[in-house]
Length: 407
Image (cartoon, rainbow, N blue to C red; front, top):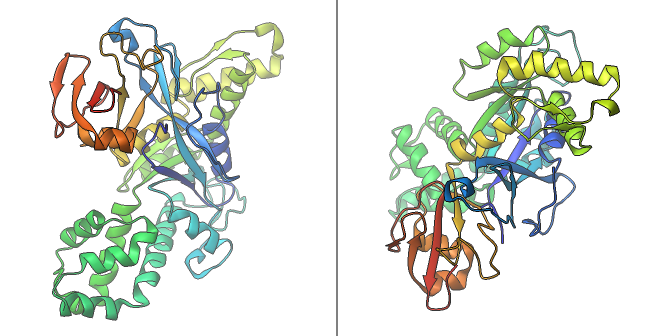
């Protein structure tokens, strides 16, 4: 029973920006989950967590999480992350690990771009003096790489696609959807890009080269939404660059991936009490820490947590799923009185689903058979029956009633 609704987050960036550190910190599990949500995890894939407040305190019950974790009222819902191969300029032409990078990009639904905000790595990812490189260039070149990659795929048979759309008088949406389905691009993405650029979908053969490139660039932004993690904020040259990055048309999150990894490792060893995304930590076993370790922890608190509120890693994951991908959390139960499943476990599962999902669609997400035999749903919070077209809200607790069973 998956906790997420097949949404994959791609972690991208050039070498030496902290991309691998972000991935390691984000996927460092704090505890095991009974019902592991992903059956196969490849070497460059891992499980991170979306953090949300659990509903069990509101209902005054003790929950028994199954497909997720609950730490002191904070529910951590598993999500799948992919560590995309490092990129360099010219990746779309096959330079470096370009082919591997772009193959992994096509599978991602949203992107987290790790940028060295200190300006201490050049355009190739080689270490340089902090402040020598402009991190805004990294954003621009990444945009270009993905846009040119998409354009190169479409350009191969654009004339044929455009003419077919006009000859069959079906518009450009169907032909483009078929051509781009392997990139995770949907008809809704294409429709929105055409609308935003004010192009005629019935006359694509009349689009100019400039029209075509504007369309592809807008399609990139819509189909592969991205946020920027401004990493290495503890370095002196980073703060001014963070403010410059915030002027771009992206959500920018100041971060210290190294600090987050250190905190999670210390928590894993039970040296400190820390939940991913917390704004502080508590030293649990001071006698087991060396003076240098305590000094390092104090530095993380003062330079990062106090100043920025968190290390930024968990905030980036949450923002990607809740803002870029517009997901909500819903809890399915069978027994609305006890908020339990058929085994008596209370609030065992938390699902991440797209905003706008209806009760009937949610039944299909849980299990195809449940969707096919759907009768109605019950909102456990209000004890009210809702129909198949009722749109679910964040933190709803829902029981699905079907001809087969409740869920």
